[in-house]
Length: 292
Image (cartoon, rainbow, N blue to C red; front, side, top):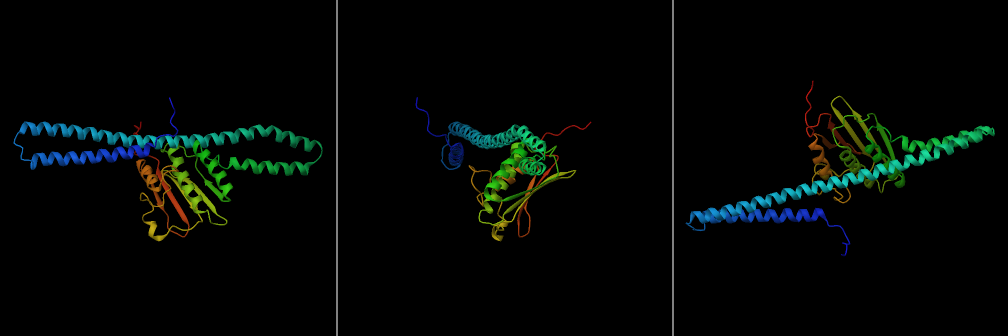
């Protein structure tokens, strides 16, 4: 049997199923109303049988629509999990590489000190310290997936000549949003920021993460071009300044996902582009716990 040369587009297939079934439901409703009100049929039994059959068809089409919507959500979750897994693999490889090199670095420094080359040893340690900071600066939280995201985005910023500033003052313990969801939310905002800085010299991105007794707050700022005034009120609408589902979550989906956990996202006023995400500690998406 010949293997398929490409994977099916689940999003398009599910969208097609939703549209077709919605048209079917509308047509059946119109047909039943016409049959009952305007057809002139006097056989009540026949009309009842046709109406029941139509209602059963409507019920089946409704189930198909719900299944299609659930499939789209599962596909997005799978994509998020795959992305998070790739980021964690990248962080793991980076840490393993540093562990492998650590003993070699110690041996070199020890040999330099034995030879009395203290200045050379100090210079060597300075270079090692710079390399270690690349990973250590992203190991700020207890959410491994989020640390992996920061590592991947830090490397992407370095490749594009963008300075990434991290001001993280929380371990994110008790964050009610699943790791892959928060990674996709913040990752999407960071991708948008990097794209906005494509033509900016000396571009920088500043990520600030805070927590209070009630909320977790993520603030992401960049010095790229400001969002046009005519788009500021519509920036979270579907189809406005999005990159498509294949590349990540659009801002409208980010807002919808956050709403499931009682969170919000806003575009802060000012010349710089700053998105502020606020997530309450007690999410309405999680089951309530009984306090003893």
